[in-house]
Length: 440
Image 1 (cartoon, rainbow, N blue to C red):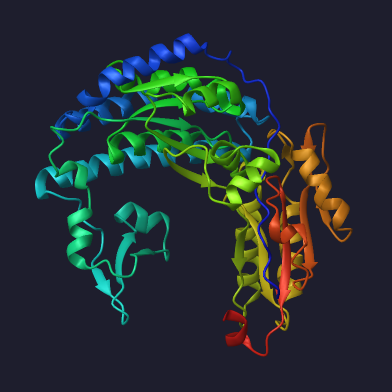
Image 2 (cartoon, one colour):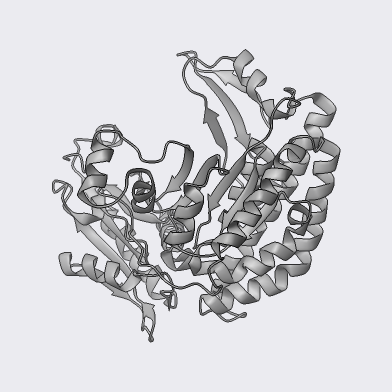
């Protein structure tokens, strides 16, 4: 298979959010307040931070029913729909984060550093591996048979591992004046934005100005309610708007760092500019923005199917697993499966594809609420007449779409280099003499 070149994620069309853009004078005022609070945040001790998290847990729980109701309304879902579980599931993620964060802070209180859930080991090539999941008994029960390790970068030894964990809580911060981070929030999953600004606050010790994505700006007042414990003392501020407001803050002298969850097209436009001049600056590595900029961007997530003597139950289970990866949040996730990779010689390849389609046919279509979804879907369909469409759709909805048997020798196929960001994925099969060669 020739190597495809990822041409990028999605360029989302501009939309008007549910909240009016914040005037620039108010943005200045918010940044000045954060500037006054950034040094104070560094000196908030661990016990006080634990108390803040406990207050957030209390306040967010009170807002939760209204939060879920607002999200369901925005995504065209009824409260009794099975798909409503997406929104409840999303919010369990942030409550889990709050519990883990509080647990970690207590570890630091008691032991001086976080305690790993498993032992760290060394591979034969001296690379250090740490067990990170499951973290506790609840994880073990909810995710039976699933585990995760972190492989540290080559050259990082045990001493450096333990020396650098939670360093901001061990090193003296008395001389630091603090920093302000601009978080450009995600528009698809409400918990992502929350995790982004909590990471900046509690793991990087920065106060935050959060610009809500216009797609889910309606959640702003609920965030202000649920995270009032951080807003009242001046450690977090929310603002609204689009490109104009974002550009103003990106270049503001009080903003030290940036974070974006979204499209790589947005990232490139910020860092290098737009048009041919922007492309040239990117090629020459001459950014317009030189502030530290972290980002979580789109991609084409693969599912690599390892062939074997699968039973009928195996086929059914994995077909359900793969199909539900697509339909979660109507396919508007950057980690949604976009490409199923199989071995062309596997005798059960067609059976798995058929079972995936049968599963999709049972799942009601959902509103394609994210901007540009219909145009993206149409572009894939026009290039792939073999696309299989599932479900009787109503206005504002798209059918679940599966594109089987994409030619692996055509690296220009958009299934290999363009993120669909809707309820669509593809399948391809690689030629190989045997299973070992296929896996390699």
